[in-house]
Image (cartoon, rainbow, N blue to C red):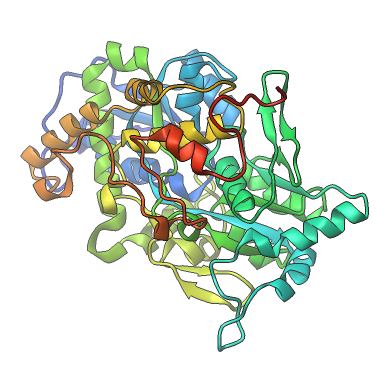
Length: 450
């Protein structure tokens, strides 16, 4: 594993725009894990810009082989915290896969993912996609354009395979959402069959993010959903075409979180506040002055100890554009959001959406009442810690009062139909009504395989 050991002198703590209020830390030497993806950026920036040091934290960042290894490291204590899939703390806390109480005081970003298909699949899809006046495909592209391709595979007796990064990943749920919105069944989970392929039209399986392009090129999968830079890498390598970003799928959807064990937070409350402060500062830096710092962020992320992809590939999405077919570059200024739109606030409603998808596809086997969704969200997402950290930053002059939702009840306003590809609005306070409104997937009272 790559290690970035902090070895600067204590006097370096005096650097930065304003002196941080030094908390009495219970633990000042910390190891955080991450996966080589663009959205680990707040960790890299907090390290490189000295925000961890400003808080008296001596941090080591370690790249992890995959999401399971990363989660196990946090649970086992080898890692003090990590860049996590938003579904991981929720799944662990409810005992899906692994049982452990994980919390998040900080949401790392919005958007940042895409769905890519092989060149061969793209050529079969194109006749089904309307074009603009310039002859380029109209976006967003519905999975309805993929449905005839999947049918042709079925007629030939071939499975249509797609990759996602982990069973409780945003990517799994986004890919399933897109397929289902286009009339394709991505399959169900049950307690006896955790493949997620019960009744599937499209067969989804796990592939680690950096391996997605090579797996697509080998023909093992026909497409995938992943975070950057691995969609743009497919374009650069000439092996695939991104057909939709998650911004087009669900405008400003929540993505990764920073996860720690509940035990760590309880035993180290000041350390938890300090690390949250550093991460908030990093997020502010990433988005401030209309993304003026993104080129510098790209240079940081391109280093081998972080993402390790070519700077040009990372910049293709990180700097406000996104390339679909080679040469089809479009403005997507909010493809990566790190602080705008209260991106870093851990909203209960974001947690509830993930839980609805777990229930929709059978990872939560039986119906739960609305109160259960709320209680589970509150046990994992911790806006109280976040706002305490934000208050300290404001008092120090390192953040603006107006940039935080002080009076929020933890729930966003319902997401309007116009912001979601299937036109079905989402209200985090009515999870069962939302689940029952979705055309494909389990409904109230239903059990997969039952």
